[in-house]
Every structure is written in C-alpha cells, then in structure tokens.
Length: 269
Ligand code: NAI
Image 1 (tube, rainbow, N blue to C red):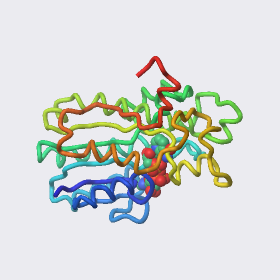
Image 2 (cartoon, rainbow, N blue to C red):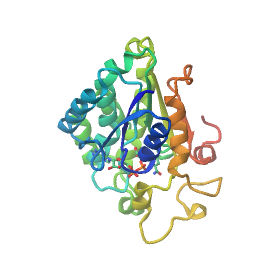
Image 3 (cartoon, rainbow, N blue to C red):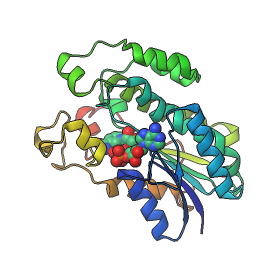
Image 4 (cartoon, rainbow, N blue to C red):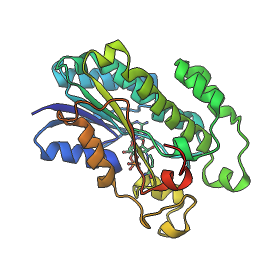
C-alpha cells in the first residue's frame, strides 16, 4: 500500500479523493486549515513550510503521490489570497516534495485546476506571466490591484474572478511546463490536472449564494448534462491519475465539467 498526500482533505473534492485512497488501504497524509492530520494555512510561505515539515516527517522519505486539491473560490473578496492558495501553495508543496516523489521512480501528482482557465474571458495575462515567473510578491500585488475591469454584476458575485481564473490557468500551464523537465519526467513523476466545472461543494454553494439551490438550467455557464457535478465525479478521475497503472499520461488537463467547456468552445480543445 502507498502513501499519498491530499490537501484540502477536510471538504468537497479533497475529502472524496482522500476517501477513495483510504478505502483502498493507502496511508493518506491529510492537509487542511482544520480537521486534518496536518493543519496549516497554505496561503502563506510559513504555512507551506510548516506543512512540508509535517508531511516529510510522516512520509519516511518516500511518497507515492500527491493530490493538491485545496483551493478557494472566486466569490471571496480577497484576490491575493485566492491566488496564493490556488497557485503558489500547490506549486510550493510539489516542488518541496519532488525528492520524496522521485524515490519510487513512479510518483503520481494530480492538481485541481478549473474549466475557468479556458471559459472565463476575464483573465489577466500579465498576471499569469508574473505568476509563472515565480515572483509571488509581485503577483499578489498585481492580483490585489485588480487590473481587469469587471462588469458590476460580476464585481458583486465574483470579485476575485480574475485572480481565480488566472490562478487556474497558471496552474495548468505550470503542470504542462514542469512535467516535461528532466527533474520530473526522467524521475518518473507524472503530473496531471483535472479541470472541474460546477461541482456541488461548500465552495460552489458559497459562490452561488446559500439561500436557494443553484439551478443547472439557469446558471451563468452552460450545463449540457442538466446537472451539476458531485465531489465523487472529480475524485474518480483524480484517483485514476494517482494509480500506478496510469503510467503513460502526463501533462494532461482533463475537463470534468459536464460539457461546459465543450459547449463554450466547440472549436477548441
Ligand atoms: P471546498 O471548499 O469544499 O474544499 C476546499 C478545501 O480547501 C477546504 O477544506 C478548505 O479548508 C481548504 N483550504 C482553503 N484554503 C486553505 C488554506 N489557506 N490552507 C489549507 N487549506 C485550505 O471546495 P471544493 O469545491 O472541493 O474545491 C476543491 C478544488 O476544486 C479547489 O482548488 C477549487 O478551486 C477547485 N474547483 C472547484 C469547483 C467547484 O465548482 N466546486 C470548480 C472548479 C475548480
């Protein structure tokens, strides 16, 4: 049986992914702000360093896989924090654990991006460029500066939409750029992303307002299947990417979004 790290394990997709691994008998090192074996605030460099210390102590030096699931939604009125948790946290943890992932020669990583990376037109390309350069201070400053003008209705419901979509685009790009480098590919570490659409979790319910049940037929993005996703729909694919048999897939960004991206970009893939 293997040893896996799951961040965001206390809720939603992270809890579902951790559950699948535990059901198979694996050891899960769970990381979250609360209700986790390792409690850390991944929005800060210190919180990430504390998490890494705890994870390394628990692994015994070898790690079979990481599911970097923790994240925040666009509804939070704190774009810098959204960017820090959605991009800088997974990248710092994965870079910090690369050595442990390399030991088996078959490490597995899945991150949770979003179909927002391709369906939201409010991405700040300069922000993505700065994020990918690794300059967290400059990136958080730019995210807080809100360089993209948002329509009024979006400012109210999703004030961090630019930081959110930009963070997820940067994360998918990081996966694709990193996976081909020698340190990762030739160490046998496979890096993939799942890009969910609207999935009913506490994050999505907070994004759509708690008063009414969100309606898939009256939703800002098209839902061709006529229903939202369930955390298990995402955990299923996250789990597939973590399996030893998934040995020829790396650098993939898999849409698990009920057809939203296909409906919005029928000519793209
Ligand atoms: P959730 O809110 O149910 O779970 C997210 C978890 O991340 C929570 O347990 C939370 O405590 C943890 N977390 C947040 N900030 C943290 C921090 N600073 N340090 C440590 N842990 C922290 O949300 P859900 O929906 O399961 O989200 C999982 C991932 O999926 C996120 O990255 C989110 O951005 C992404 N996503 C969600 C979609 C949805 O419709 N629910 C759609 C597309 C992407």
